[in-house]
Length: 271
Length: 365
Image (cartoon, rainbow over the protein chains, first blue to last red):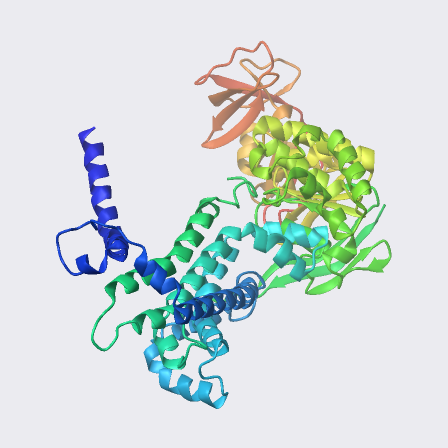
């Protein structure tokens, strides 16, 4: 019993440690202006939603939210579509040199974005895409594709070959095998990839800061970074905005959590 | 009803890239064979003998490196499995985990765009034949091994393929279920009369199910024939040792001649170059020799195996193990010295070097 209690205590401490920043953020977002930089009180005496109101009524923040959604959704779709096809070929189609190709993809994904930013800037400019959502979608896709290819390849590899052979004998074309068998069987992998890519594009700061100039393409992380004015840092608004942009991610993970855990492949082979 | 012919079919696999010194593997070598229409034909052999590759070649999952495969008189060598109209049952059942039993069985029909009402009646018919009516809404993971195997059979049978292929379909089942499913497979075959090619490593399964079988070894057919023919007239030592349970007694001629003195008249001078083989059920272990029958030297009983209808004894003779039948009522226990009754005509002989059968007739005295 004591052992069990100690374990729960430890878990509680770790959980608290991990959630503390976001909890503090939340508490701050509810504090009235006067209590923002004083301690005590730890908890606000008069909780207020005025910070949320001012953030959500700000048109530039709404525009940034819209941009963030567009960029994240399209990046995710592109990564899944191309990454899925590439991963299927790499995992199951007996390509010559597929392991070499995977290694190459991995090494590409190791370039730090900061190292490539100048050439990318020139490239984006010459295409006339500076300060567009399209530029961000394209750039994010190039950074998230290696990740999705790797995750999906390992998921696809775990599908037994006999399952695909059965589908082939039953009359599937290679593409039918991909979307009728591979995709549904690997649903947990697809969802995991979706979440990772979505979070990556949602949070990305460096590229967004470099390539967005106006509200036309500015995403939320950049928008929040631009909150501080010349003479003051509006901690309340920053906190409220942070909570607002964290919510979709939390919701996404929460929604698919069970799907991710569910072992969909159970029962396809004796095990 | 489809007749299958294989003409000089070979299959080489390229060496795997991550092994430095690996060579080209020839899984199947110059296979020539004719499987009659409506025949139950089995490839049997130890693992790695090329039997599954042979099946995959017929299925179209692998393409032959050379040679030709014909269904009736049309070459299918270049055709995809889809175009060959074959159905296959796999060792792991290979059911689609995300689909219900109904959708699993109907999957081949759905791909061929068969109308929904027809799908339902076809699935209903095959499900009742295999006792799956109450399971149609379940997912594969909610089924037992035997049920999964029956779903796999149903999925393969649903569209009445030209050729029905099975790759070790019973080896994941426990012993009792295996016997049950063996009977189911034979029954379905007799009802449908679809040309069936079966692969197994279990010689007993092959014997029971097949009209004819081929024993494979290192990518080649060692012998091909009816089960009884294979059992009674093995052409090579490999076949003799592979077929039959308990396995045949294979003795070096000099030891055989000491244990069974009458053999000397057959073996004569070829003592060092042949092996003598005799089935355990043709040797009867007795405590004391009865006059009038050929009787062996004494050997020590090491182990008694009671299987119910039969009782077998493992005997030690000069360090060699010999299996023999214990007649009912004979009370033999381990450690006893026993004799073996035998008939000279039950022995068959194989040349040592080549493993080929040799006929040795009585040496004239």
